Amino acid sequence: MKEIPFTIASFDNFLKEKKLMASKCQECSALWLPPRSICPTCKGHQMEWVELSGKGKLVAFTVIGVGPMPMIDAGYSRDNPYCAGIVEVEEGPRISAQILGVDVAHPENIKIGTPLTADFVERGSWHFVEELAKMRKMYLAFKI
Image (cartoon, rainbow, N blue to C red; front, side, top):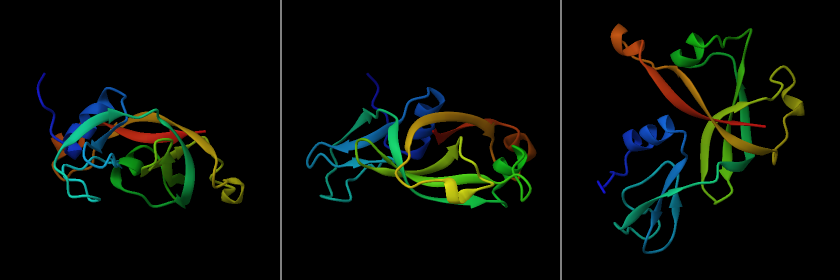
């Protein structure tokens, strides 16, 4: 089997397959999401890919009205904001992602600790070169 490098490009390729993957240090068992090629905990170089359950809980969030180009292209704006948050996955690591299925008009109703499930959303990518800007990319999101 071909060895897959521990890079964001590899992580993005797994997202295309609708898989949430992390790197796991074979020396200290620490999990990293997004993946790391060297373990920040023990500085180990022996990493392996592990597929995560996709289940987690909301630990922080914000409602965004002026986002990056892929979000603007998807229709989000001051009049149609979206929620972004930090999710702690069941296995321990945390990652930032869009939070789907919450009432952004009433952020006081969004609760820390809410159970979430990974979702995968296809959007355009942001780039100055028009041909590259039209390319589609899979993004990680979490939904209630």
